[in-house]
Image 1 (cartoon, protein in one colour):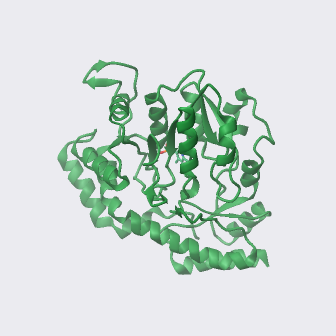
Image 2 (tube, helix red, strand yellow):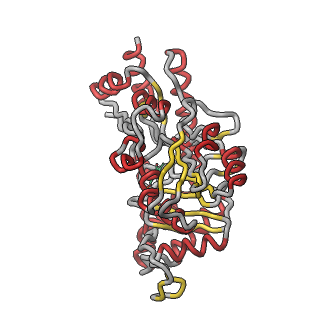
Image 3 (cartoon, rainbow, N blue to C red):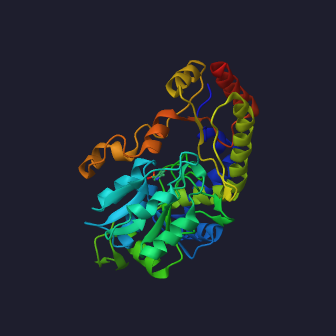
Length: 365
Ligand SMILES: *Cc1c(COP(=O)(O)O)cnc(C)c1O
């Protein structure tokens, strides 16, 4: 049996450090915020090259708090890619705004920058590029369009931790970057976790208030906020894992390249990497017409695979109120029918990968 990700394999590879981090946090008596969280926030800020990092309870909360900090709400519009995890759309709706979708570039699966400008209206307040699958979105044109129209950029960097755009870390390029530490993400906690990063001190202060009931001073709420904090235990675990991130991402890249070498000759559409991109392969995505048959074939051989995502957000029930319909975003809809994620994680062995490759070859021939 080959799974899509193996979280225990990673735990066992650094068990001593993780166990020590957990135990010392238990001994410290600090569980909500405190020194562990502050230390991890500093580590992330320096890794990404940003001024401020604020630990939160999840990546979804990071998007909500980023939107709230930019005063986005009722009657506002936010531009997002038509192909992403539902949270990108759901958080926009949850603050009362309308997600305005833009179709994706079918090669990179990122928001197609050629269609962004025509989606901008007088109500547009922000653009949320998503660095989907670990490949950076095309940030330079996005930032230029945003500046020209006076709208903000929130990067959904849940899948791009460690990725680079022209040598700069994704998450550090827009006004606010949002991270997720969901266990299967490239830097994953052992539970939920998230973070917002920014180099704008005023935005940082506002987001810090929003994570604890709108407090600047304890118990004196200045606005309605949330209870959304990164656990000290998770911060300690993530701090222990962070030094390995670049190595793990390199292993992902090496495995992805090895898949590519075998799949390209078979005529399978493999992931595209633009020359300016450092790809961190959060997911390894191939495109095949008989996708569902391939998935069933792999399952029979004990190989897991997954569709990210079977339903583009515009066709979801919560988006019906905006009048979207089938056919609105053909590239997103086609990707939902043809893409498949194959097992890829840093601890995947060559033998396991060979098994996956052999099974795919057998299916194609
Ligand atoms: C995982 C993910 C999120 C949400 O993060 P959680 O920590 O699970 O709340 C948001 N956007 C994208 C693109 C994601 O992959």
